[in-house]
Length: 297
Length: 54
Image 1 (cartoon, chains in turn red, yellow):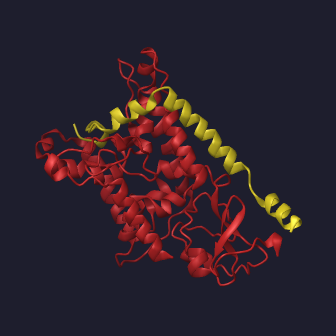
Image 2 (cartoon, each protein chain N blue to C red):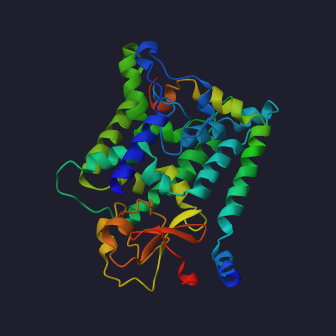
Image 3 (spheres, rainbow over the protein chains, first blue to last red):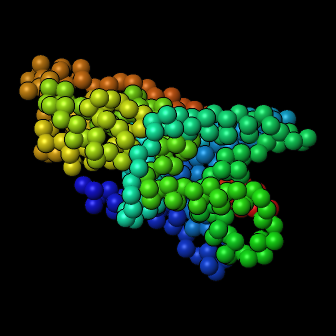
């Protein structure tokens, strides 16, 4: 299952970054596919990006609401929020585990041999701060004289943007080097910090700083596809704790907001068939294969 | 057989479908307002200040 997941992660990363003409055009893809939402965090200023980043677009919509309304355009970001909500309602944070390019990068970095550390659970709440303030409130309220806000998260924090867009654009257009300043160096520092942290701990960005992960985690009870604990089969051995890349103790909190449904607990750890994958309440699979719902046995 | 079908129906969670429908309607309103064009216009431009350059 882990091999399949890695393949899907790779294919998804290539699909949302499928434009490889940038070495010749020296700029980003500008075709119509850019109206399609990238399920994971993937900067749309990445030269290879074929889709839009939901977090980047949401900030841009929030930042431009006042001006749009003044011009008689009712742009509230409903298309972006609607698309994100559909993805969240169907998959929730399964997207983080299966379709996010930045998640894949962190997983690969974590394979570098080193001493490994846990991440304190309290740090998980920081990502909600980023979602509320840096993605919604600050772009909406901190506006210039013309009524435009700024994409605060992209501009001042997002390490995915630095890695996927900032650095590649500097390589493609070296003349941009003259315009970089403290903001870029600060973002570079944040990126290096997360790269080192990813080697030492599992998925630190997803757990502490990703506003998209924070948004998807709001669907922990509502999502269509989710893992379920079959309590009558659970022996509370705790094996599922040791394999979870997000530090979730699945048998203690099966609806944990951090669960990215990577299926490691179901596939690698649980020997008692106590974890199943379900769609809308109907079990569709477990370690032992397709399942009959417990209620029907 | 009928009992099994009834049990199966009972197990189905409705909340995800309502959630998806809610956001689908929201997205449709956005499309009708012309937000798709706005998203495309933003996504095809390199926003240098957005990536910390400039």
